[in-house]
Amino acid sequence: MKAIVIAGVGGPEVLELREVPTPEPRGDQVRVRVRAAGLNRADLLQTRGHYPAPAGVPADIPGMEFAGEVDALGPDVTGPLKEGDRVFGIVGGGAQAEYLVVQERMAVPIPSNLDMEQAAAVPEVFLTAHDALITRGRLLPGQRVLVHAAGSGVGTAAVQVARAMGCTVFGTSRTAAKLERARPLGLDVGIDTSREDFAAIIREKTGGEGVHVVLDLLGGKVLADNLKALRTRGHLVLVGLLAGREAPLDLQAMLAKRLTIVGTTLRSRPLEEKIAATRLFADQVVPWLGRGLVRPVVDSAFPAGRVREAHERMASDGSFGKVILAF
Image 1 (tube, helix red, strand yellow):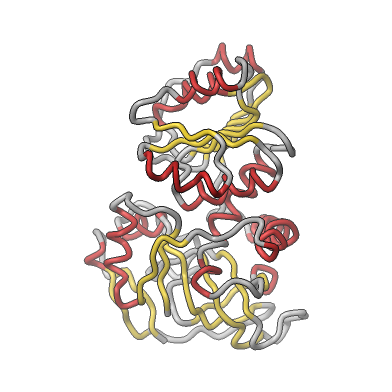
Image 2 (cartoon, one colour):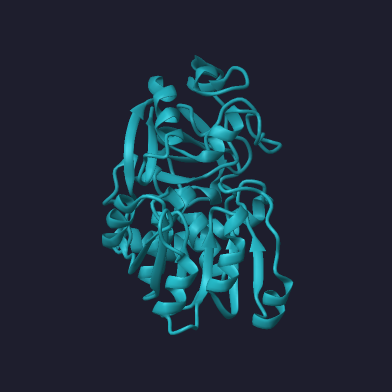
């Protein structure tokens, strides 16, 4: 089979499309003929040597989400999946290949209204957003939420998940055009952080109360203003570190507001935790997708042979939504 292989440490130039052995499903695994795979910033970091794949997945084949058809069943698969079923899901790595094997409960049927490229734009961002907002952040219908980097893959998904729950959605970006594109997805208040103070705007718009949940893909220096933007007993869910790994923490603000800060990542979780998050996604988000209440946002799609261009597109920060590789 053909697969994207990380042939060294560096930028897009170390990525190659190569022939590698086709995996065989064992036990309760299914093999998927991958038709499209989403590109994530974790792939860029892995290529640069900063984010190695977890144990048990290919170390040199990137890719954390897939869309395709079930191609073969392991001997212990109990169903209901069968050969030919269209499925999508997340994996720890190895998705950027023509075939991959995955535990049967990690493969979710694709709604009929999505094509493969659209489906490949769903799993990582919507699973992350759903898990971060609802499971980790305890967001409830009708509450207020702040989504940083609202034009990113996870950002566009989080805006839609919050809107589907009837929440008021604040979102930030350094690009005004991205905020405008996020408004039809459910963004109520867009904040251009290249010229606006998001904490001050949130205090003004909420009568000084703040938001119930902050979904932070930035980290670093925005921490202090995140605490200012949260209401009493609010939750800060830290998902990404685009703005840095360290920041001073105002413990007095934590105490006074009785705040909760929780960090989260999907890739390194044990299989059973990933299965639990996947099943919640299947039960709630997939029906929303089927009804068109939420939708994938595809920035661009590239044939697998143009993977270097796909990486350059994502690294440019010009993308809105997901960059997809087609196999």
